[in-house]
Figure 1 (cartoon, rainbow, N blue to C red):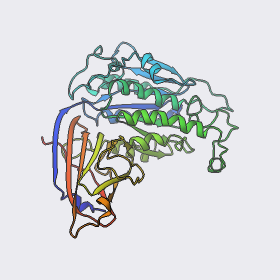
Figure 2 (cartoon, rainbow, N blue to C red):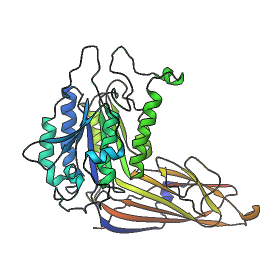
Figure 3 (spheres, one colour):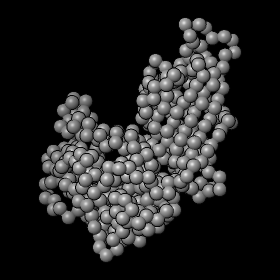
Figure 4 (cartoon, helix red, strand yellow):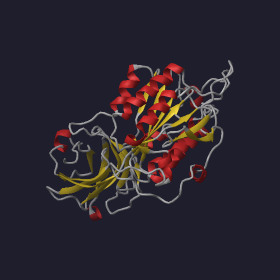
Length: 415
């Protein structure tokens, strides 16, 4: 394993290309207590001032129904409403959002978007165009109006909310950096992905129920969330989960969302706690160049000389299925490929790459044999600028295996 001090001394080359806007879509649970909901909205309002003015933002809310807020209408607030108890296909989501299946190029950083430019501009606009309206919506956001009986739980359609929120992004911002930030104050209790029923007499599944395979909704919910996770990860989008609840929120069922997209998970007792506020706002930390310390949609490729072969990767990534001459027959975790997608990266992101030294016809390695390994990472800066980052190392070859640790560079574009 290569130490971080050695990694910092490796030869490095970087190329930058034109910039594109990054996108952030908060998905807010409106079944929260009034105090929790206000604290969450206040944190979101603060975050609007921490992201670049050209970054695209939107807002979706969910309770008994899911609503995608339509921006750009100063006269009144409009929403697209989806039934919380119904599972929608990808095509249905596109049609109901009135989105074309034709992929559009993401707008460049600093470019203002006319509302009629393309379908998703009704829901996602640069901060500088919609900050005032979005602030007003968040300040006026109220609890879900659906009545809740004393022996019932509030209906919460988390599964529908996550699936529908991915719709505008996967149609219009394919392979462009995007964060879907889900905020939940309890488990899903309606529709696909539900974890527990709305009857209070029905307890949420325990570890023992899962071990005994007696959890009523577990397998069905687990399988459902794998669908949105696959859609988001394949499109280069990240799903972050923030939970503000003393009880469980069904994170086990939703684990594929952050795992496949390298999203963050923040668990707190309430959205009004300082732990949540500090953790959430830390996502918007900036470097000495006033750029957010987060990058998006990384494509990570490995090229080697003849002997070292790639066995696999351990980390929050997905395989691109690239079958090259650099792939080993031995598979370790995410293997059988020499390229992966990591949808979100920060200066602290790391991944372990495993190699196998293979010689022709089983011949032993000659004394002093060395191999070349090249790490090629193509990703999007928080400024929107695209970067090609290449690191090449020469390594003495062990007799059997070689293990290298990749640590992304913290360098940013030159001013």
